[in-house]
Image (cartoon, rainbow, N blue to C red):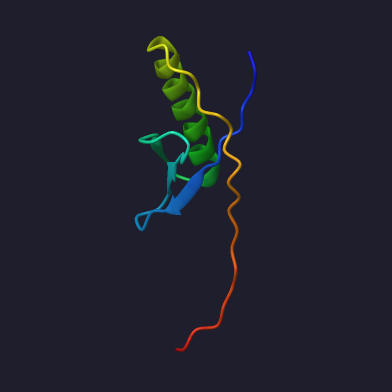
Length: 77
């Protein structure tokens, strides 16, 4: 069995916690009350998603090489 890395997108929830999406796996969304739980829940969601794909005879997606970054700019107040 090989390992693969998936990018995660964490969005802070106004009520607390984080919603996590996996861009390479459409519809793979989970939630955690803090970053640690959110990451653990994302790992579980990805494993289940890939297990379901395998059961359907589908191949896992190729690794995503997209890079995310941030830049700070000044804006008028």
